[in-house]
Every structure is written in structure tokens, then in C-alpha cells.
Image (tube, rainbow, N blue to C red):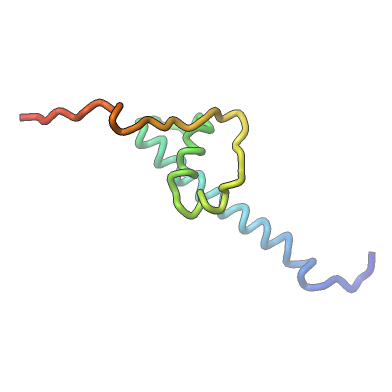
Length: 89
């Protein structure tokens, strides 16, 4: 190893840590919103994280090739099969 390290070699780990921290914070924030929408007080399932990622346009595009392990599949229920909302009087 030489003493003449490039600036990239010094800055790269710091930049990587910052980007990783930002991604984790973003996914946790979106997962918290998904859990809140499901009336849960904790983020306990990877499913909530997967839903949060796939419902966010930018994260979905960025993480399109990523597979979340032990997550199962996302439900895709056609709108015709969902129960109809009744009007309250």
C-alpha cells in the first residue's frame, strides 16, 4: 500500500455511508407510513417495507432489480374483486 491515495479513495466510504443512511431512513419513513395505514404500531414485517418501496415511484425504479428475501409476494387484487363501498345515509 502506498501513501499516495487519491481523494476518491478517501471520500468514497464516507459517501457510501451517507447514501446508505439516506436510503435506510427513506425506507423506514415510508414503511412507518404503510404500518400506520394498516393501523399497526410497529414495522414488523418485510411485507410493509416491500409495499413502501413498490408504492414509491423513485425507490421502485432505483430498487427494481432488488429482491427482498423471505418476503413472499405482493398481493395484486383486481379492482372488480374488491368489495364495493356502501354509501352511508
